[in-house]
Image (cartoon, rainbow, N blue to C red):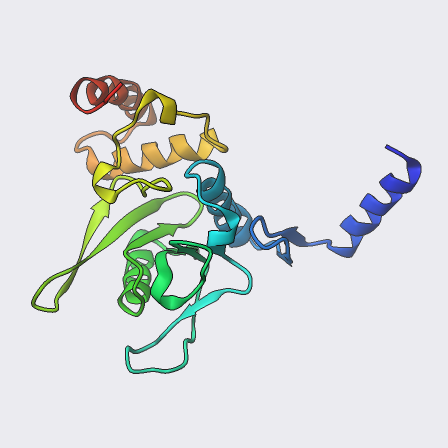
Length: 218
């Protein structure tokens, strides 16, 4: 690297002190804990782990959903919006993600509100530590209910096939630490009587063998 190039890099870093470059849009945004620990991590995972293209995702400027179904203007900002294709219109919206630093109950309540006001079928709440994945189910009588998913679908995968893998589909994740944290938090919230990390770690080791016997299609 030349001296001139090093100088340009340092100059650029000084110019954006206290900011982070958004993985999707390339824009420089304020490096808040929410942005660094949640939005950027999840954005990268959607591309590198789940196979979606950057052109399908909107982070900056933030996509907005309506406050009420009758509203013409959209005013609720969404941290991450994922579309079925590169056409970023409301009717093409597939997934929204809420990455605020809330507890699980408040985070899910906010996520469901955003999903109620949009056509998104899948929602993600992620605060950098804990997470939840939801699917919105529309019933013939007009009701909306929500079911929790074990994961979100990879690009081209049906929601019904989540958890089913071929060997050719397997690849190293972009952030293995976050993956294990997700698994640990999921087990802590769903396995009765286990709270110590040592016991949860044993469950993490045991689960792949049990799943392989029941559900894999190698």
